Length: 196
Image (cartoon, rainbow, N blue to C red; front, side, top):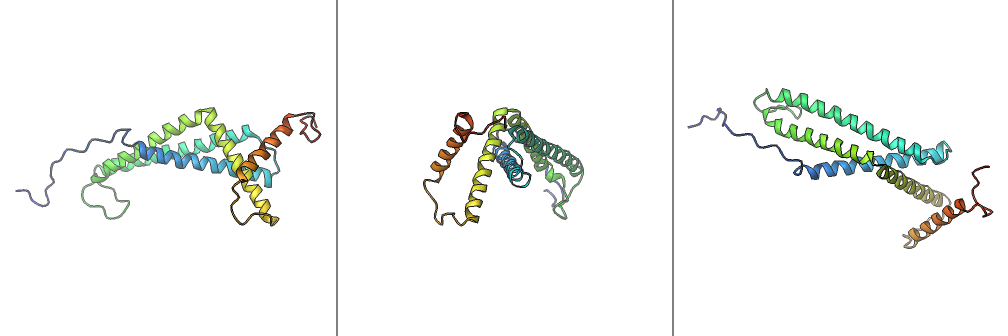
């Protein structure tokens, strides 16, 4: 007979493998990458509208890397906090009295959280080390910022269409191509001259 207050001797569950945690890590990385894009987009908008700065892709790349470094530092701090909490929880028995009262039964979930954070840091550092990935974040942010500013200007002037325009993306791509051609063709009378 086992008394109700006696503890059953059970083998602890094996910790999850990295493959088993892949979904949570992918979701976390998606959230972080979206945040990096939004931050870069905001820098483009503020630089253009508030500061009247020229577009500087290298500065935006540095900004994305700085934002990513902040996320990495936050995750390292979170991992350290989880590890301290886990060490304390491993010595505490009984039922939790509130949501931050971790006990022995919480050790495995805490270890899982720390491992997810560590894998997220690893994946984020790999992505940010890839120059093409960072440049694509910046270029995508610039496209989104330009569309937002263009839409806002159209609405202010009362020219924004009420219904979605199915040809809008094609017209924007055509305009972007025309603007790119103007900047590349020095013989064009409207071309941007870098020596001015």
